[in-house]
Image (cartoon, rainbow, N blue to C red; front, side, top):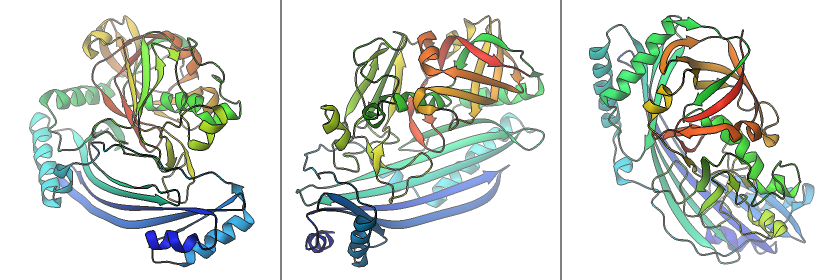
Length: 438
């Protein structure tokens, strides 16, 4: 990397070399039968150069590929994107890697699925289900001409169980992510089976307003909209609904949202972002009051605020290395007025518990709008789940919906936005939301 940087500086004013090594192993099982064992290993290199106020970039699969410099120059000549200064910042180590994950063998992953499969069969011999487990290791190295030189390793283990309905479609699922093998508890599996059995009790809703509980998993669809509002790039463009509203009450005082890149062993924990800015714990909304935006280095300079360590090489649908660093979440954490999940549900006379939605990427995300097909939800009557809701939608705007936060559960679940983990949230109860029925 050092040699590539030195050679690049012979033809440009400043430069940055970023290298990412990724390895993964995944195992899947269906009804106790092994479906496949897949693995991937790759090295990716990105070079960004600045010359005469313009920036160019190119990628390669090895730091020894000297053609990357020529290609970066061609990019600079024909694209000429806005140049940004490369910073030299200091950072602190974080807990982002686990020996338990690194040392986990494929045999152990298979044995884990076999054991879990046998437990489920012993609890319900008629249920159809699938299992998967995935081990991921990512190494990141970054150096630039300003003197920054850093690296970190991130490890992650994802485990999931899902059931299939009579038509063979996914019905109910449960996911855990962390740094060691999670042992699914009896309670975990009993709840999964109970929800699965409710598929045999279909119910329909009319157009109505109801108390709604989002599972922690589904909160990711809402967090995409929250992120669009606090993205400093959108604030600079003045397309964020919360532009110029720092210090104002935006949401209910019963919810706090923060972005914590330093969270020990989090799904997106890292020592520094893809520009070299140290990760940090940034409170976005404290008891509903807007406190901060998430900013890259360039947007931070334009707004006169600190960079928050959220410049990441990805786009809405991909995490490819050719993506320029853009503002994204690290570990979004939802907190607030917590009561037990069981008590939260029991307090609802009639409402909806939503565990799956489709269309999270649709609508005007940056403005907070959503119109989501409900793929999995359960009617709540007198504090009990009584049937599975078929053919309904939920629509609205988070800047209205989040004013109606009434209470928050206690069990954290990994959130997903579209394809990727966004952080963690418990279930969240909204006092009223608009449901579109059949």
